[in-house]
Length: 618
Image (spheres, rainbow, N blue to C red):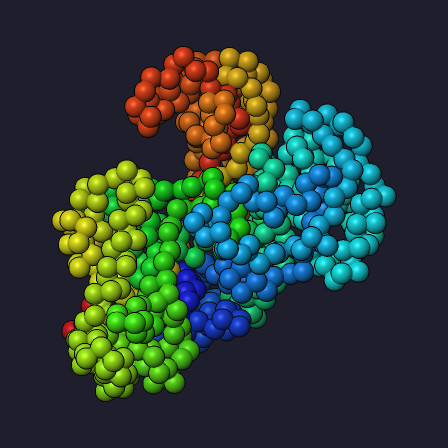
């Protein structure tokens, strides 16, 4: 038997899917172990082996790939327990991380505190150096200032250093020299993140913020993946370990070591990918995927069979991470969401009971009623079949907790449970409504794909509330995100900066940038042993009107290795005008757009499981 295993780590459970060569699958769930996620992963793999009637070593010896979605990066940002991080930046830009382009999550809250600092001001070192927009050296790098700065960072206990100089994405000479100095002065530094390697384009705040986040989470993520891979090898894995990225693809662990921030926000992407595949199989191109687990509720819009990917203004955990991410919006609503009384009403979440102690009905010490307790008491969950019958649910304990919650409001246990369900359904339905409304889409034209351990329980109420006529619930709903990881391909989404009015574009120079992108992508795909015949490439130009902030990615016709043609450029400009007219409802041909870069999306097709439905117990 040969098999592939998908592993999705959630806030409450770690889901595992074993996909056999014959298309059959096995699902397992193991409690997530926040202190070391690899413990929960190995425990889940042992459950898979037990279910197959083999030892763990025998199972892993037959496994060609373990595809892993981890929330280590997100947890690091939530708990703010990353590596002690310092920043070396251009003189005059020391406080850029505090200014944040003036952005506040709540513009009406004048007292809203700043996010917890990753790099405090005392470990942000501004050094004399300056490049112009074309990469020309205006002020040479002050190497002595870099040396003094590195010594200062070392004295403050910094173990990871971000380097971000103005216009370094055009000419990385100064950043590369700074990295050499760091290795000379501080040879045992754990990580050095150079902004031109993390984000190869402007603007400078977005590049600096992304690089600082990468330096902060990188050592934690790298150590975790290294430890997990070591444990898997020791347990008998002979196949490859692949890691999910936030762009909806997967990659080798070595790619994560270079750009660890690309895993932040990757947790829910497996479900979005699986929903798109399921929708395609059902003849549905436009849909909304909703994943309700124990801790969060994740919503993603799928258009024309593809999950929406957002490359601009991606704020995660109050920090801007300017990397391509599947546009999944998460709210604190799950089976473990805790209900409480606030005044004369019941509120639910965002606090979660998690895996431990979990809902009251788990019998693990939880005392506060949750959505799971409410669903159980209302008969929406079968206690005898929960977790394949391995976990007994205590209905009486849930009833007592719910009665205690409802007493101040004059409610009995059933009324309190019904109120909890009504509140959480309204909250989740509103989350879906916001996502589709911001995209300018009528929800009645969409289908709902509901999965996760709790998603199908609440799906029909939400679909009805949104006016949707079709709700799709996959048979493998509880492990759907893990299954989606097995459908993910190697995806490389990178760009190179270039700035010129479109009529002044130097096509040989632009083509040379595209060739560099292609060469970098080809090297990563070769490392992943993806043959070129399984690679699909698509090219885009990043375009804007003068004064606009965010790029618009416009498809560009190009054959790899050949120069971009004038006709292809003109076609891209016409498409840019068409999209602008569609969005703004005004004609725009009198305005001349700028080309701000070229972008490559390279997809290396992996081995996808040819699945047949799992057997459904009586």
